[in-house]
Length: 85
Image (cartoon, rainbow, N blue to C red; front, side, top):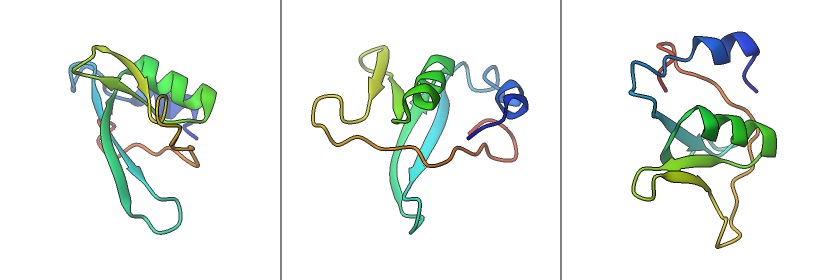
């Protein structure tokens, strides 16, 4: 998971409060999904262990699988080198 220092260094201002979040399969590296997170979505993802995005269309937090049951379990979280993804 992210360290506290990594969380503090995330550049939410650069991305107007919504950061692209790329979800990959932990073993194969296959990209499963691209969504957007705000700080609250990231917090909920870390706390629950399930990927939570901010839905730009619904303007609310959305946990992948909340209606279908097909959740995405978090294995690790890593920022890119610019701290904006």
